[in-house]
Each structure stands twice: as C-alpha cells, then as structure tokens.
Image (spheres, rainbow, N blue to C red):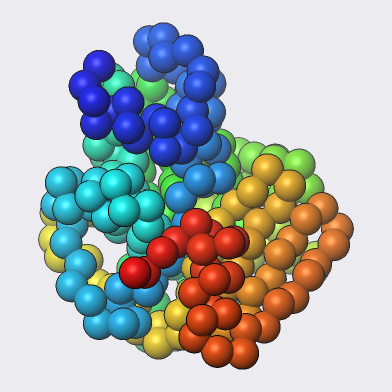
Length: 248
C-alpha cells in the first residue's frame, strides 16, 4: 500500500483491517471520511482557484487539512476506493434539497455522487453532501428504504427523472437529488454552486457541525448550541475549532 493511501487513512482516522473490498468496509470508510473531512465552499466564495486533479485535491484536503465541495470530496474518495480495489463510477446529479419543483433546471445545483458496483449490485456512496445524508452505502433498488438511526431515506425511479433519493421529513418525503442512467459519468466540466454564503458542514459521531457565514451550529443528540462570531479572528478560531480548517 503506497504512502498516500496510508496518509489518507490516517487523516480520516480509519484503523480497521483492510481486507478485500466489501460493502461493510465501504461503509466504514465512508463514515470515517464524513466524520473527518468537512464539506466547505470557502475557495469558491473567496474566489480562490479550484482544481479537480487528484494531486491538487489530495494536497488541499489531506496535506493542508481542508474540506471541499462535492466534486472535490467525491473525486478524491473515488480515487481511494479504486486504489483499494472497488469498481466506482462518478456520476452527476441535480441537488434538489430546498428547491421548489418548478425551479429552472439551470438554477438547481449540480452534485456529484459515486456508484460502487459490488457483486452485481450498484450502491450510492456519497461523501459530498455535508448536511444530513446517508453515511452508509445505499443499494440502488427502486422502492428500497434505507434507515440510519432516526434518518430514513428511499430510492425511487421513473422514466423521466431517473433515479431519485428521497429523505423523510416530519410531514412528507423530500427529494434530495436525482440522476439519470445515461449520464456521462462526470466527464464534463462541473457547474459550481452560485451560493455566495460561506458554508461548512461536517458529521460527528454524536451529531454534526454547521457554519453559515459567522454563525456556527453544534448539534449533539437532541441539543443545539449556536455560536456567532463577532470578528475575523473569532471566525478563524471557530473555523479551526469546529472544522479543523486553517486558512493561513
């Protein structure tokens, strides 16, 4: 196993045995990744250059201990999985959470996810959402429901929308994202989000941390703590404390 793989596994605090590729191992890697590497859009908002080459993403996320957007995170994770022997397809989707059904398609953010094929079955494996989303692989089977603790998701499919991943809310099922079977396997240029707010999100073993500009929210079990920074110094300190990100 090469030194970069070992660096990656150390960064995500993965200490389990690396046997042959299995769905159980995939779930362990996915959860470790989500608990260690945040989703964040700071380079986009601060108008820094973004590269989608593996060496550049590795340098940013593993060496400099940053997070990234869904493309960076899933491109890097797909590289790790392939190095460990998994069959992986990078796939583009439309990210519909918090968007109305009549939103023009060009205004719906583009998302990247991974399809991992194991024993003839495809599974969604996605480390690029940041907010609530499955932490384990989801079988790509129409009608399948996937539960993780208090969270419930389901897969649907039709001829118009393709595959759809829904999340259960208090009142209904809400579309998280959708993608087609005939997508070009993420071979065209990604369309980055138009979001102008500074955002960071990471899962934790007990909940999750989120940031929207200068407001930080810490979810642990049923409790929520909100922390608002008053200046740049406090913001940088909170960014490092809750997301282990240093912009210096």
